[in-house]
Image (cartoon, rainbow over all chains, first blue to last red; front, side, top):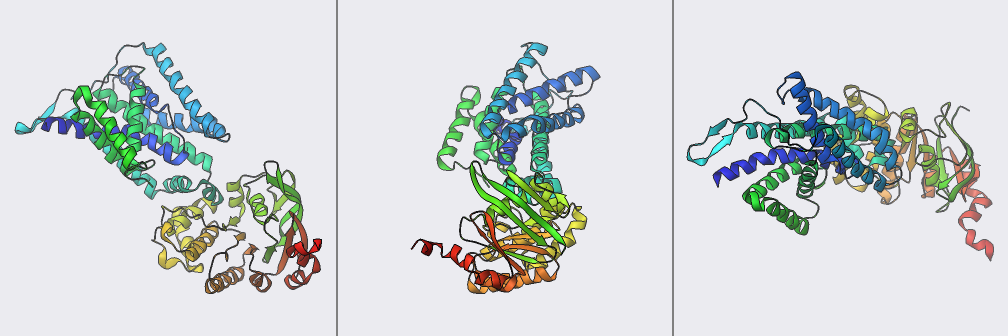
Length: 279
Length: 242
């Protein structure tokens, strides 16, 4: 039991990281990015290729994948999604669905359907806790990176002028434009940031779980769960929701994990549909 | 006279509904230009066309030497157009100071460092400085209207657009707003002011335009405009049929 609690808490940091990019795009661009799970897996493959190619630890590949995914997000939003959103939200939603299929199949073509995994040197290490179980070092590192990412992102949104323009746009995009904020560019930056968090999430989940080209949809569903429990657009909510979801899943064991996770989700939708920390 | 803004034969509307029809007027640098007219005559639509929320289907709008007819809203803001809303729309999850800061950084193109004293000044002019740390969603209506003006000031405007700032306020609050506008005029801002409260228009503007059915019916001295039979007919239009 103690061991499961530990595992659940550690998993929470990763789930929050998986959900935060989704919640940002929901809250700021008002778009449901159905390709978010695939972007996470794309980042995991990028990390794998760079790690093997350059002989780097997967953790160090973040130096390359995070800026790369930011640029991909920024360009994607500016070249494609911004133009589609002028015609309403449905075309953009469908295009993110299309992107998820394209990314999944491209990964399948390039990497085949075999399982892949990011290997780190401290893979099997753990810290014993007397009779209370053990803390796996890898999961601890991954969880701390997840929390740190959300913390930095929150600080960025609160304290920088780009962060303020993102929050202003999220509150009222028309008023923001009248204050001189370039709304489309702000959307681009928000999507860039969301994919940068997906890059970190990809490396993290790739280190703790095996991944295939088709694993993305599983993470999309987790991201949805985290967004609904935490409340759209709230980073604090995302963090708390990540832990709730992680714990619920681990306590359900390997047979009922997802089931319990979704029971929590259903209860949440019934009791507080706007989420724990909605704006 | 030094013309800051001109509308030339402007048609504009929403989708197929044409609201503005052959609208012509000029605003001179440093004046308070009042706009009146019955509900639905196109006053707010004129602001929307001026600020870039809708594109004219005909005609041209020139501001400070630039043809702004097809410019984006944020580009117009950067040229010096600052607008307030009839129903205030602050960024409710941000503090009063942050609201003005966004305007100063993006609208006036300042660094945050340089923007801070400007924000303080905008809040002082509008009498909001005491509340700079309050979350703007918690402000009263009068303070929200002040914040609208403070944000517009933050963008370092050459021209301020005031859309019914007195609407919904008590008699005493209207006096506060009139004093504030007089203050802004003294600071040298050019102002276009839409208002239904006729008294404020007669006493606080240099020139007055009465709009009717999307076009400029009469432009001139506020008292003369108010006294004209044409304007009376527009406001009391019902009686013409009898």
